[in-house]
Length: 104
Image (cartoon, rainbow, N blue to C red):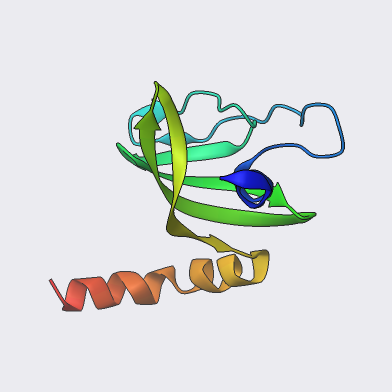
């Protein structure tokens, strides 16, 4: 995928490894530690929510993954939310839940 892919999905920068972070629990209990030390919530077999630092900014990344050669790799299918965007989504969860109830 080249440098662009490594910057977007890779860990660390500036030499050395990023500090290991505690893993969030998914629906099946705590998630396993990831290579780049991000906090991950597994929401289905191949979909994850992760919190990572990218270009010096904290992002909430919701992404689909695929398996290749025994490794789990990210796809382009997903979204990265800035902290401002995440706060807007979080603050509107009740309205989203209500809309879901009205449409089911």
